[in-house]
Image (cartoon, rainbow, N blue to C red; front, top):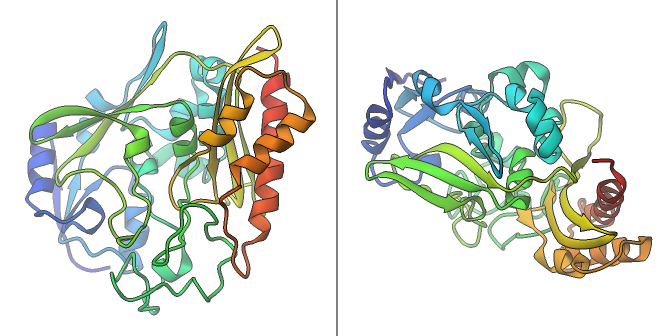
Length: 336
């Protein structure tokens, strides 16, 4: 790990000022980085993938930014709330099980006790070519150098949202629940607080895979807001082992079912795309319909209609379809 300057931010203004002083680089390449749980940042610094000149400790902001606030018709989660605290909250387990389960199935118990919600959605890819600096050709780490995964070992890589410059998979779980539920972000920056749909946070790789989010220099996520309640919701994750493993394919499903008819449906996919992925075409097939196995299969096929497999990861398309169909079945039959 390289030497760095450590700063502790005692209020949001100080944090924003310290991070904004890093210049106009995107947050993931800024010379000053925020530190919360540190479960991703410290790893990448040890690997020499990220080399910040300064670390800004934002944990003192937790008093105002870690509240878990279920309301009558919405949910507000502070960005510095711990993953384990949110997953264990009775109101979230009851009214937003897709959120609770996406957090419970992530990482390990020890990491969930340290990691924050805001840091979790900002985590960077686990692509081995990105995390191993001995590989020079990684467009996320060295823009313009190429993508070693294209013709390399790409079993864990994306089949949706890829480009000719990057096929790295977005690794998180919680983000799929957020995008499925149309979550909003509260973002704190030099100009104050602004709101933005969570769906607009992550950028598909295109020809600039090193620019991963739309956050402006110095900005921090301060809260997540979800409207409505979604008690009929599930998160299903298929992986190589039962714990402490990233998804090969996952699905976040939320349904509104009245008298056997699906009035509204939300589907998000994980483990298969370059960004948290909303399957809107698949959702449209469910609305106004009575559920049966044939409908589940048509929806699953639609979710992966644009998928493109490569030498090692083509299996994810068939696996993803099965995960979506099974998650739909679980959501329809769950007792609420």
